[in-house]
Length: 281
Ligand code: PAF
Image (cartoon, rainbow, N blue to C red; front, side, top):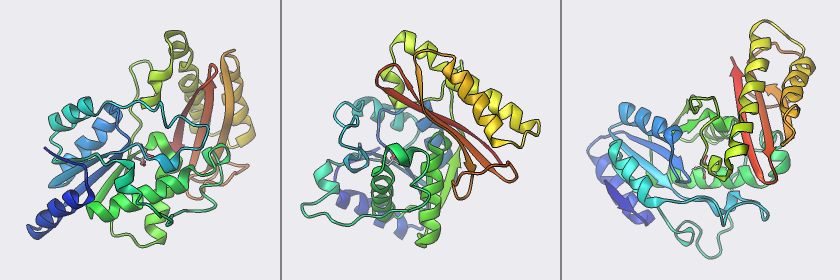
């Protein structure tokens, strides 16, 4: 496995692979890899000749009061996992390599970025779109793999690719969960053992909500109330949002008629904010 820290190293390898007519799959990550990331890498491995994993904690998608400094990092473990899954190249640049002095160019998708997590994280999705655009250009990938755990991110990246005519297929992959249902996330490491147990309330609430929708409940308010009530039955859980939006535009709806995304963001304890969701197509 090639370990690249510079954009030029990645481009040189990509140039050679393209010359040989090989297809490239990109798995963008911020590192501290878990089974969720592994599932994306495995899918890319099956579908593409060459697999690039980017491992970069992207500073411009963190707000001033967010966890950029403490975001978990373990590049050695990431390399082991990537190598065991047959990754061809891991790209691990320093922030200065990605953002040169005088960097002033940003990419953003408005409207879709304003709802859900965009309300409490106003700069987040522009930071994501900008780094993802750079990674698409650097890797010249044919396909890029994103988890549905970050459903809003997935919808926004798909829209950016459509609107700006990027030559890449975006592959959305299912949420990977722990055996007890907690969605895998690098940030789960922040939970102490009591919070870890209580965090299961997200999955419990969403499972009930999904059951209602699949049984034919059309009233959004009713489904949201059911989800919110279950979450709020757990004293250390504080709801940031519980929302149901249409899965294409991510705008609020009153009635469930087409594909929907039901998404929650919940603080468990003082500081740990977890997200989870379900989609009904
Ligand atoms: O989902 C993530 O880990 C990040 O938002 C991404 C897509 C790697 C961009 O930094």
